[in-house]
Length: 273
Image (cartoon, rainbow, N blue to C red):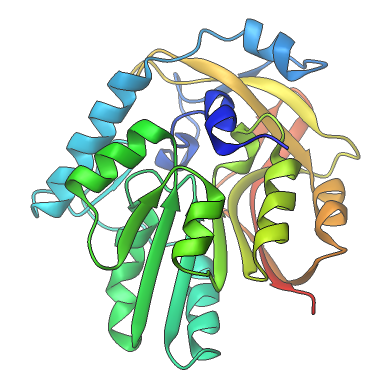
């Protein structure tokens, strides 16, 4: 199984699709179908990770200073865009543990989901939010954003050892991993926490599709491999260890890729005993 440091080479920057609420000229596009990650990577331009990190850090600092209401993937918003299914799922787990909540946020950037959830933090007696990210994001997070509730780690094992999670969150990240199922297996092996999957590309196809995502130049010039999962196959891969509590999806509009239509899907799972 890959360690996080090797996975980080295949782990793209925070997901940009979440910044767009409707299709438009020059918005995100998906090109080609590829037999494996190597060929998809060869067809990608890559990205300037230093530039992405700098833009994400600057946007997050503006929110921290009260100069903007919310940021997501380096894009600033005038109001917070809440993911209420995720918030409901997290509060559900807190209620089951006397108001205590410990989250492992895999690929959580510099704390976007944490800051979104903070509006609901008053009802909790304890909150511990652990982000697992690329080493450069971890360094930046520890320097500028870490506090008693929010911590940053560059591997899953260290995050689990620091604060055993009651919920694991994957928000718009699984599709950008070379081998997402190995990461899910590692999570399942290290913790009995519940699982929340948000804004993940899923279609009604019987097969996963590996494609290349093109980022709008208005954000930055980049392209990189991504998966459009077969919903059936993804749920089947999790069925042995997780019980599906509730599916949900973004309903603002439809998306299309090389394999046809797909959704920004979400799922709430409980760990089977």
